[in-house]
Length: 434
Ligand SMILES: Cc1cc2nc3c(=O)[nH]c(=O)nc-3n(C[C@H](O)[C@H](O)[C@H](O)COP(=O)(O)OP(=O)(O)OC[C@H]3O[C@@H](n4cnc5c(N)ncnc54)[C@H](O)[C@@H]3O)c2cc1C
Image 1 (tube, rainbow, N blue to C red):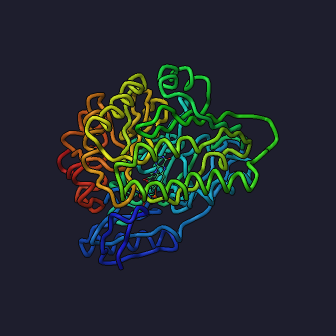
Image 2: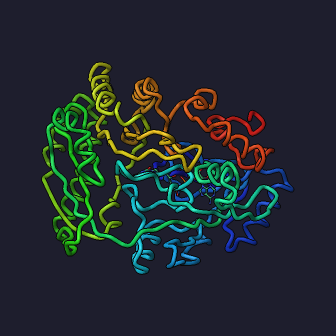
C-alpha cells in the first residue's frame, strides 16, 4: 500500500501498515517491530507537508485509539486518546463545557500529530497546542508503556514536541478552559498600515493574524476576540460564498490560471484580494478557528522573534518581486507567546511571529522556500516541524537552546533510532549524536 500526505506530494510504501485497537495491541506491534528490527513511524492525518511520516518499515495508524478517556472537572483536565481527530475532540469538549484555548486554522489533524509538531494558532499571549499537555502516555521501543508527568519534567518537556522520535504517544492529559465564544472580524487594511501598527493590532486582539498576497497593497486581517454575545454565525449563503467559493473555488481557479500563465499572477492576486469583503460573526470558539481548506498546496513556515516580523514580511515581499518568484498564495502571519514547555518548541524562550509561505500544487516551491529560509535564518528563524524546510540537525541545533537536553532524553528512550526515518535523521541527527 502506498501512503500519501494531504498535499499529495510525499509518499512511501511501508512494509506493513498496522492499526491497533488498544494500547496493549499497540505495545505488541512495537515489540514485534523491534524483534524484527523494523523502523516504526506513526501517520496522524498526514497533514504535514514533508516526508516526516514516511517509512519503508512499519507505519502505524492510531485511528483505533480515539475519544475522551477521562475528565477531571475539579482540575479542568481531560485525558484523550492520541488518535482522536481535532474535529471530533472540539465538539466533544464543548459538550462537557470545555474548549482548547487556541487552535490552528483547520481541525483535520490527529491530536498526536498536531501536538508532535507544535501546531499553533495565533494569539500573542497564547502558546502552541503542546503547551496544553500536562501528561502523556508513551509506548517505548521495547513495547513498555510509560506515563510521563511533571514528576519527570525533563522527559515531559522532550516528549511533547518530539516528531514521533521518542516513541508512540497513546494518550494525552490536556489542560482545558471553559467553553467560550469568539467575535470574528475580517477586513482589508492597507499593508503599510498593517505593518506599521502590527504591535498594536496583535496587542489589541486576543487572536490576530493577517494574510497578504504578493504584488498587492492590502492585507486581509482577521481578529478574533472573546465575547458573551449570542452566537450569530454567518448565514449559509454567506458562508458558502466566502468560505467555499472565494477561499476555495475562486482561489483554486485563479491558482490554476496563474500556474498556466505566471505573468498573470500579480493581477490575479489583486483580483482575489479585492473579492474579500468585510465580515463579522459570533460562534463557538472552535467553529471560528477552523476553516475549510480544499485547495492543495505545499507550505513552509518560520518562527522568528516577534519584533522582527514587519521587516521580515517586507523582505519576503521584496524578494518575490525582485527574483520574479511566481507566488499566487498569500503569506500568513501569526503570533504565539514564548514557551519553555517543550525543548523543541519553535517559540521556545521568545515571543514569536510565525510567517508561512505557500506554493500551489504542481509549482516549484524550492527557490522561493529557499529564499524565505535565508531571510528567516538571518533572524534566527526556526522552522515549523510539520512544514517544508531545507535545514539539517547541524544547522538547527544552535537555534534551540534546549537541543542537547532533548537529545539526552532521546538517547535514553530510543538509543537505537527505532522511531527515526530519513527525515528525522536529517533534522534531529541520529540518537547517539547526542
Ligand atoms: C491545510 C493545512 C492547514 C494547516 N494549518 C496549520 C495551522 O493552522 N497551524 C499549524 O501550526 N500547522 C498547521 N498545519 C500543519 C499541521 O498541523 C501539522 O503538520 C500536523 O503535524 C499535522 O497533523 P497530522 O495529524 O496530520 O500529523 P502527521 O502529519 O500525520 O504527523 C505529524 C508528526 O506527528 C507524528 N505522530 C503522529 N501521531 C503520533 C503519535 N501517536 N505518537 C508519536 N508521534 C506521532 C508523526 O509521526 C509525524 O512525525 C496545517 C496543515 C495543512 C495541510
